[in-house]
Length: 130
Image (tube, rainbow, N blue to C red):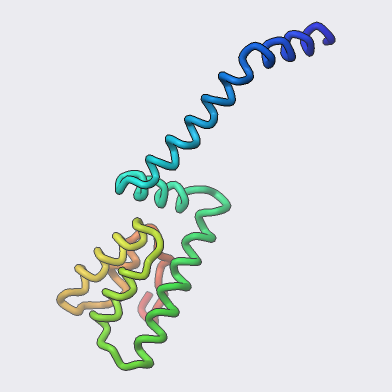
């Protein structure tokens, strides 16, 4: 046991700076990647898929969208304009894409909840018929 501890300490002394440099390079590279458009989408997808963080991010986006809709309906804006503003105010690009698909699916003004209920990032809406 003592020999193992001494070997680990010796290895850390020899290669510690290299390991530290690699860790810093990985962190900096990750931040640079997240700044790219593809990196932002991948980061937002990861945030939605993480076990503990995902539901929190999803509920945060849902709350933001509900607040925006509530405020703009009180002002008297039409629903298509409200949906456009919700899409623009979404902090997560994956949720924003799902809202855009929902908006495009409602171009004919069928049932409002159908396209959003098909998106994995929105809880199923339960109406009188569902």
